[in-house]
Amino acid sequence: MDGMEAGAAAIPHLCSKMAAEDRALRLKGYEVDRFGGYELTRNDPAVTSMLQDFFEAPARAGQPTAFFRLS
Image 1 (tube, one colour):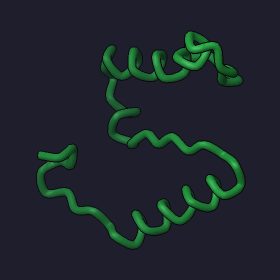
Image 2: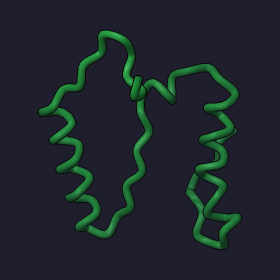
Image 3: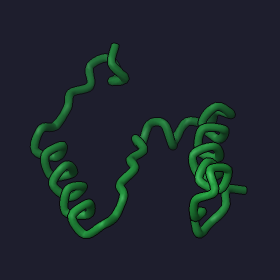
Image 4: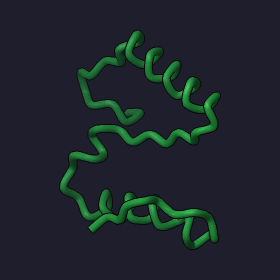
């Protein structure tokens, strides 16, 4: 399956609204990175590792870092 739970259905009007909001932010010069609720609510060390890597990767690349730190 493509990441959706069995029996789950996409809600097109919500997906469209989120896409429009992403575009509006990008037009204002912001970079948009999304995380799904499911991946953030699982108590899984792989999730913690993924988030830690996501927020620490810019520093490793010599780019500005996030304003907060995962603990």
